[in-house]
Length: 116
Length: 111
Image (cartoon, rainbow over all chains, first blue to last red; front, side):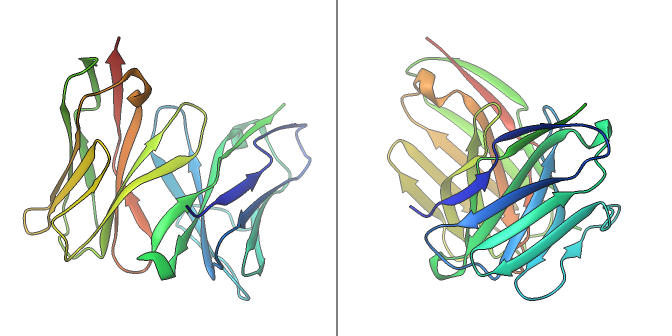
């Protein structure tokens, strides 16, 4: 099946630093990818839509200057958490819909971010 | 605004039993519906996708049904095994590739 690879799977960083998370579609090209945040024992909250070759679209309440998204190619989107604070600690997951496969969504493994 | 609800929130059943997980959505104008499983601390694994024109999909011991007019989907798991223990999420797409997720059902299979 299609694979979406997310890296790193976990990261610990100091307050004030920036962290970059990568999301790659390995078996197909994705003009659109999605970034989610998940709090403990809760469902996924959509943060933003990553659009290849154009600006990302952010959901209401998500700070675009804090969560920078770059979709530089048809197989790679990156999420950079800038000036991270402890409240940014969370589980971040990306997904990519495979348009040629009934638009089935495939998800990365997730990244556990801990800001200390 | 689409809202997706899953009942029950948690379910424990003995190994070997068949079980049904429920998903309901408020706006029937969907493009497709997907069922996922999520293991603790992991990403989501796609289980089944049902197009809006379909009534059901099957994969191994899993069968998902869709009744778009009533806004309901069920995931049937036959002959449950301890390895089926996970959180199961349903999600609907309105055609713009965005998914609206349900609240999830945490399933525990008791050996």
